[in-house]
Length: 202
Image: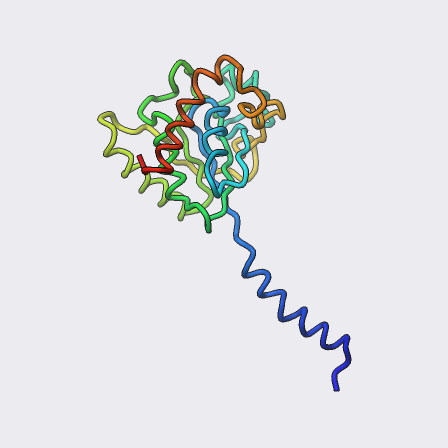
């Protein structure tokens, strides 16, 4: 007759695979669509997005500061790493939303923000993400008369071009500074676009 300890070990072995299969996988995509305060706020409003982290990527200066990126000489773009649960929201839906909440036809600018740090950018981690990004651009292009100029590039895993988390005061900026002038003028219209997209897909 098996001992109690042996039975416990057997039950544990049977439960671990089941628990692992029930744990939803997490994924992420890095997006640049102008000021990262705006992009971060937009994606934080999406069910299934577990985190949105403001940062810098795609440049030549390691560990850049906000001031250095704003100077426009680092090649870094303001980006947001969108972390999400694919069981709740798909990458395709997030990419479609991305092209609804910013203008992908203006090179190196969004609204009154101008400079290479504000370029439209999708930083992909693998071929599947590249395919998804290219398909999303094709879908979005049908809504624009001007050509989309969004860059689709590989996300570096090391070196200056990798994702750098921005300074802490940039994280959750709109949540903590809803009455800041720039935020009040630019972010509520984007959140309205998010609401309409989630409700109607437009």
